[in-house]
Amino acid sequence: MEYRFEQGLTIHEITALYGAVGWQHYLQDAAETARGIANSTLLTARDGEKLVGLIRGLSDMHTVVFIQDLLVLPEYQHQGIGRELLGEFDDYFKQVSRIVALCNDPALHDFYTAAGFEPDTQADFTAYVRPRRLLEPKY
Image 1 (cartoon, rainbow, N blue to C red):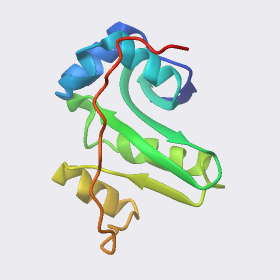
Image 2 (cartoon, one colour):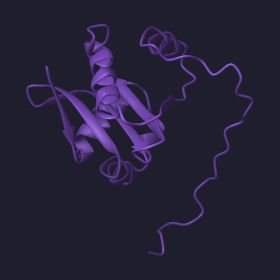
Image 3 (cartoon, helix red, strand yellow):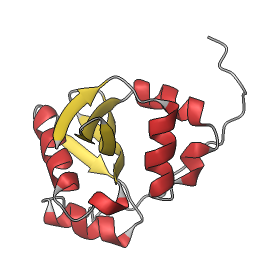
C-alpha cells in the first residue's frame, strides 16, 4: 500500500470510491467534487495505481483542521488503511492546535475514538449548512 499526498483525483476515481461507499451526494456533480478535492489537503492510499482510500481536510494550517472525508473501499476496510491515513494526516498537521472530525456514522465514532479523538461532550451546537444558491461563482 502506498500513501501519498496528491493534488486531485480523476472523475473516474471519485465515482468509483465515493460510489462504492455509498456517498452519492458527492456524485451529483462529480466535476464540482473534483474541484473541491483539488482545493483540499488530500492524502490517498493506493494499491498499485488503484485508489483504495483517502482522507481530505480543510485547514488554516495553524489553529484547526477539519476532516471532510475519510473513505476506504469496502473490500479494503478493516486492514488498517483508515488508521494509517489518519495517522499520516495527523502527523502532517502536527503544528495545528485542533483536528476536528464531524460524523454521523456510528462505525466512524468508534474508529475516531480508538484513534485518540475525544467526543466534545461540552459542545452545544447545531451545524448550519447554506444550500448552494448560484450555479457558478462570480469570480
